Length: 417
Ligand code: AMP
Image (cartoon, rainbow, N blue to C red; front, side, top):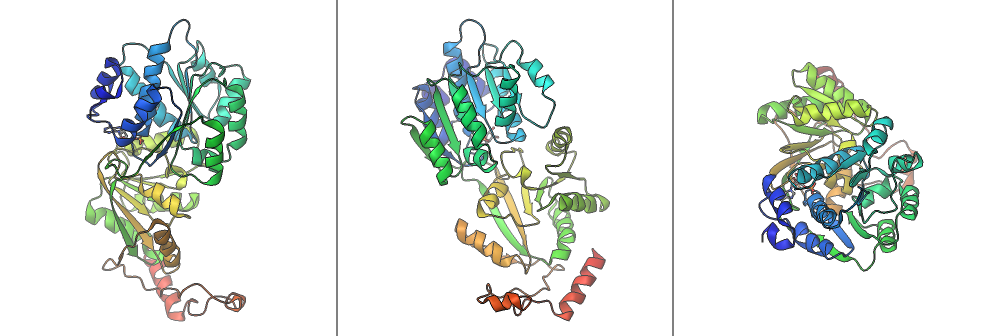
């Protein structure tokens, strides 16, 4: 199937050709005609499915068909994070660049000065991509009005609610016109997300794509047993031995992000840290360095797990395991995007084995545990979860407490780190 058979006009078909898409993905095949017919859409879309273009192309088409008179806000896209705002906005700009009319896309998010965004909105915008809090700030400053929006897109709705944007979304809904088209995308549908969808959408076309090559990426998952204290050494070893050109490493804390990046740098590997405490400028810069291959390794907290699209990212490493199975899926979904293959490596220690088993169970997979020669795990695996409170009261789980020998090994490993 080709883009031209989806009902898009020639200028948009040319635009997708110009950016190198040859065929629509499953979500694009299903969503584009429904959106062009004016239907609301409820999309269950996985990372890397091509959902941005699935809503951006019909949005641009609708703009093309309806624009007359002075510029007014036609499409509003709400996203959970600054990174996703920038990414979605840039994708739309790229598509719009090849169109026969000028499309003004404004990207707005919090954590940076509001003034440049107010300036950018002067004279209006055709499309705004926004995080909810900053959008409301801008509305309060009279920098834009959303009362004439024809199409509303909620991207990563589950994440929007996870991040506590429910009240902001409620306020935004009240300011939007009742007559509008709604597109709702989410990777997961817990009850709160479903309730929001039910409230927002009118007889939506339901679109679920799970088995398309782009949406089911080719990711080889590996689980390596290693002691906590040897992880940085193992990471360095794997990067060098496998000659990994670009690696995204996930850690649990901001401190770990800084610490591991620092250790790698001291071992001659260009590494940067990425976490929520950096200023927006610093985040953009370090992400830019990573994307441009000036950094070989990015050590990040879960801030980077969702929404960020880094082309040609061959390897993701879970240095610390994610808290949940859903986070695991989001993290590993950073690799193997757009039809490329990727590797996702998880470091598992004696203490985290049980947690990883839970992730495996939830996501319905089972990985063989590997050991890397020279980095074999010395800590002993914990037995299954404690079955009596007394175990805990007595100061630990029987058999899990470290032996004197374990402690000596650990100390030796730390010293050698
Ligand atoms: P998304 O799910 O929107 O984040 O898109 C994931 C990746 O797929 C992005 O890098 C897009 O540029 C790419 N992509 C989207 N649509 C297509 C397509 N029809 N053909 C090839 N790549 C695509």
